[in-house]
Image (cartoon, rainbow, N blue to C red):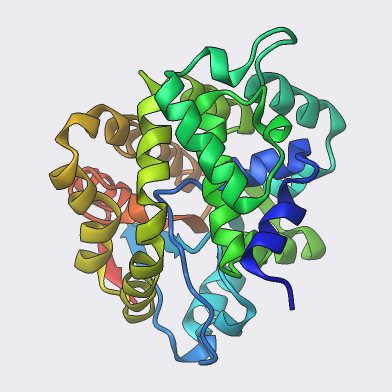
Length: 312
């Protein structure tokens, strides 16, 4: 069995466009679910039903990194998918993986051009902290040389998650994407890969978020069990506290980050869901669960536009 360092080193040995995109979709703010021998069919998860007239939108809070012990999913979740006309995701990572041109665009957005390096674009203290982490994980510094700060932040988060046995291939969104592609079910996107990348690269002072991520790595072992419990019980308030509120309370100076990563995107995704719902009787929408809880969430925005919502 591989150790955490071996898994991390294996992952980082060759950073491909596909790996970079997976890192982007596995942002530190989304769910981290630890391995557990319990069957997934016993877990409630976060599934909501939004109705307006004769239109139905199922909203599933996604676990982007999970473990095979979370399958099979609860029958109600699988039935909602089967009964829907189309699957809606944040971005179709499987389609991206078969598109070399898009993968090349991902690389261009993720890396500095030749001649520029990460160490020249962040304070020496933060770069030294990153170097220390790289040594601990036995990862060659060259693997991070040209990454932009936000991409480095997301990539090291992914490495830490995978070092703990978490796997994006077992994510809930990927589970349904695999089914949809296999069955020929209509698959729609709320965002684009390039849009997500440009959003990350537009962060003001991204080096501060890189530093915060490095500072908080040690907290992951306690955060994971709490998040696991919240998702398994379908506790919307606990999810909101863990994903959004606690971070805002501890770091109010990062309000602009939450606005960019959550609230602005919630408004745009809710609008897109409303538009898609006008064209389809039933939609099955899979988004990061943090987008479905609390004030300014997709759920609240849909309610304000006339949808009745219940958790099922």
